[in-house]
Length: 592
Image (cartoon, rainbow, N blue to C red; front, side):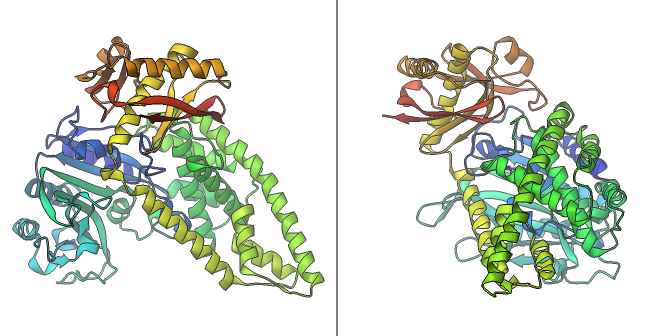
């Protein structure tokens, strides 16, 4: 059902005049606020802010998404790290009536969900913004009874702004009654049988510094529907891992481990293995060339692989076997139709898994030695309990799940302070969550003057690197904030001082030439003919934006950019380093 759902969704919105966007990279492009794209709208931020999109004002796609906040919750029936989000957008085009009507039509006619199984929530208003009666009236006119239209406050039915100011507005959420029992006449937000399946956000206000709200000139619609959750609803199961998305993978893990998914303890380990290997495949396949490391996305990739291996050991799977590669190959086959990079980078995915697994086997050994050292010291002191802080260090540094620490402690006739561990774990989780929240802050509001300058400078840097090092140099990722730019590129060796100086001089020369920055829309083929920098893969649609900096740099990009290089200032390379095999990184600043 998963692939049918994606195809049905895209076909439906194309029939309503939308253009299909290919999924963006799972790594945000030129966005320092997030390690991963967490929603379908993230890659569209410049266009929601008013940039003109080359494909027009009605867009639809399925987007690769990843959320760190759910990492420690994966193992239950509904949470995932990587997931797919279906979305349709109006960039100043249609608004509430069309959006709500099409959502209703797709659910009831496209997916054949009975109206009796649906309920909706809308914004009830506050002291500043009135209730969203318009949305409620549209729903009622379509056949949703008043008793199933629920007005709720900001925490439930209001989106944004992403920072302290910026675009925001009410949303309307659609719920499905997941039960064989008779659908209640009234919608009750506290009744867990009602499951949210779709959210339509109406960006119609802009929050000002003084806390007031003004109407936006460009009113946008942003919708999101999770593929995994909706598939579970359509296939009448309350466990995402029993759907057609996961069924064969879970069977494979049952076969490899010789254990049953019907045993809940084993099922949890199986879900973690299945979820994590899928996420590993998608991240490793990305053209951003993420490899396991101790920082940023590479750290998350490493953590996923190691966590997956821990739970494979728990199921008594031989971690020196090729169990992970076998499962990865199944996932590659499942997703290569939708994300061509999965097929293209198959060998890299499998190499990442094997290499990191071999490294972790060594770390696991070190952890076991550390455990023996700890218990020997405690025994000499006549202490028969491992404190929570130590248990958490074994978890955080050596990858020991608390269950493994408890099991080994029991063999030594020792207890473990599980409450103390939980306290440390919750503190760590809260820091991670807060970090994720802070990383997403900025989003729509972070297209500052400084960021736009740095973004434009990456174009000059990219071309200068090609001039100095050769045309085989290609961008592999970038990260920009108000203080600096970070630019990753393909090159096998460390740059000499002379090469760095040359690159720096070229960029500053072009800045001093006061070159105009212009934008044209054209086909990817024409852009390639004209020498524009771009990957020219499935990422682009039929029309792309090409930004030229004088006659020096020409690159496919969504924007935004400065109007003239005179606005940029003095360019200075602060650091050049390796970040992976064949990948170098430059950190640089601009000053007045």
